Image: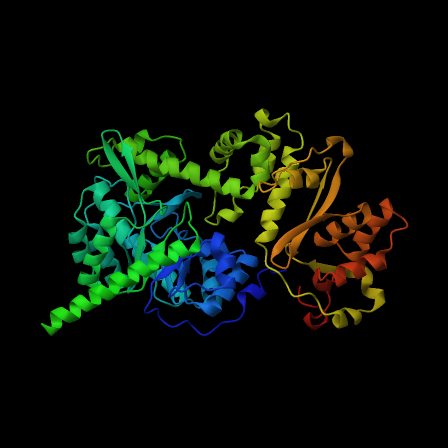
Length: 298
Length: 269
């Protein structure tokens, strides 16, 4: 018996690329509410890992898809892992992508499994030629399998390695060159990593290949005291912080408007709070567009 | 071993709490103790997996309280790190771990309550198949009935316990504010757990029904399953029991056990 037989059938028409209003991360707590009454957002994004069983959660996601564009944002592929990609996980992701034909598919520049153990986190890579070759090979493998372009997200980091030689935005740009992938620019992650590792977020934004950025992420973070200093934790547990909105304004000026997502994964508030955050992102994007037009007109 | 492989193995050991000395020297301090930076990942690993276990085992958590649960979860995570990224599949071995966990030895029913919670969780993530067409089933010659093998709904689970774990579960659900005492002396139960509509339900089965359904779900032929049930209950009404399986929509397919049939003769299963 193949329990996922029905689950694997039915290719659908692919969803149109995202445009217009910002989206929100959709978590289990809000799934039924969103199915019953789709909120006034442009689209929703989910972690495919939560829907790979094919049960009621997956069926609810199919109903969401009928009402809103969806994006599959993977956290489990371990593209930077020396274990190699898990065939089982890649096969399950392929089934979901084939079945849902989402507007976007994305993953992270990180690794999460080693010696068979899954560390349940987006572990940072050393940015070296060796890492570049490994990640590029895994992105190729994934894109070939899914038969589509994926976006790669910059991670938030709490440490860096002494022997890293390539700055992160250049590493991402090189991945685009090598694999034809796109990028997911997580503005909160740039801010968090910049503070944690001591780099300039504006310079980072400017070093990214703007035309290959297909999505923005915005989220809240937590400031954690450590010894004499502090570390910013990317916990997605609050509203987007003021400095991150400011950095996003710069990103809009440097890169332009892109499909934008509000992520909120712990201490999850009522749905209207998320929708209000998405509306803020919309207002910022409109203002940025108007500024551009004004500059052009002048 | 490549440099990257060596580094990831060392980071992995640190996150699993085995050894951090070999990796700390590779980490840039940037004004902080490199070990403190590494500790963030270790902390997230433990807390996020503890939360994942708590989401699957809320009744166990309530029975032992949050602090004990976190203590047990930590020991379990150290013993059995996840092997795959889908966390709804993490923790299948937690009931067995609890059965062997000395600190929980006084709560003899705890491992079976955990088994029930795992069955509920795994049933919730199973796909649902379309029930088999009664007309297709009617075409099977009666002489072939003994060789029938059924594919039952993938979400079906069967669990027998010496304790009234269904009542313990009901009384200790986190949303149940007025937990009534459960008489542990009332004896055990045989439970069927499955998806219905978009939720998971469970109910008690009598001994015969439980033996039959469990045997069929395990891939035994109708003849083997019938022999098992009739041995314990010679008066068991097999035809009625099969009718109930069919009318409840639990039969998703069937085939005949003989290997010399053409594929056309076999319903997909």
